[in-house]
Length: 19
Image 1 (cartoon, one colour):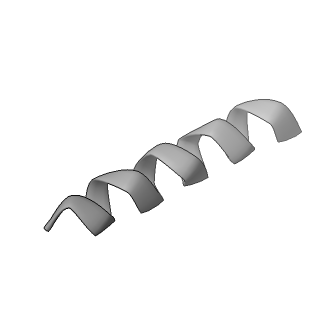
Image 2 (image 1 turned 90 degrees about the horizontal axis):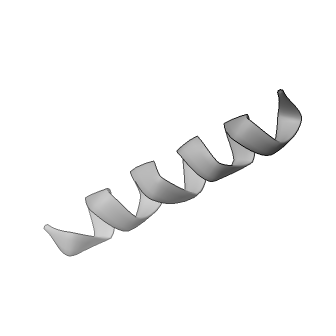
C-alpha cells in the first residue's frame, strides 16, 4: 500500500526535525 510508504516518510521527516 502506497499509504504506508507515505506515513513512514512523514514519520521519518518529523523525527529528523525533532532531532
